[in-house]
Image (cartoon, rainbow, N blue to C red; front, top):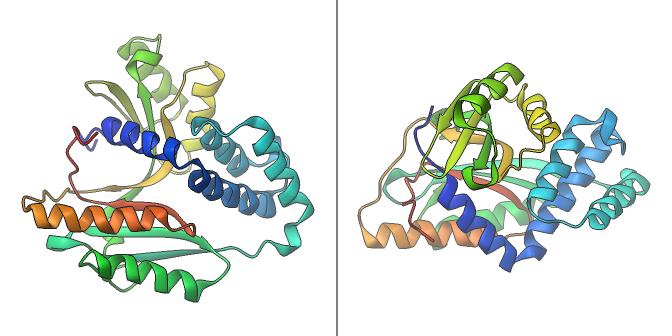
Length: 247
């Protein structure tokens, strides 16, 4: 669909996350807390919690840490007051950036996100200013080396499970679903014990922007790195055509 492999960037991000596990575990811990508050502590009856648990496992979060997070959230549900907030803005050369955050203090988070944009020469825009350039989709990436099924067999399997699209990239398979069928497709793959490099509902750009100036590339990397360090920030989406050899 996008014809744009995220495999190398995901592997690169995973290496960064391995070096900064505290941040990714904080992010997932908040997602567990919100999922438990919204749908209860039993994953069997809470598909959102099942998806967060799958994400936690993909990021090598230990099972006992996941269980502790669920128990803590269940016992503390009345005190969980995280709000989901989205910020939209522009990086260098009109690149579009969307920031999703979970926060217990919107003023603090807004100021921090604005500062990240400003330090990288970008600017925050109004709600909706760039999100129309993205499609919300489920995206599952599978490392070819980790998958026993051949391409045709895997394609038929995921399309039968409800996927919209399947692409065979150089090092990976990319599966695209609607947000509604994401959980069903992910769970079908899990049942078949097919390891997933990443599985999430994400914002996929309709078009990508290539940055040619070293200065612009330095600026957008500064914005993305600063956002990545902020504990309130859950996810960042952008339409920069990052080079696949970045790692």
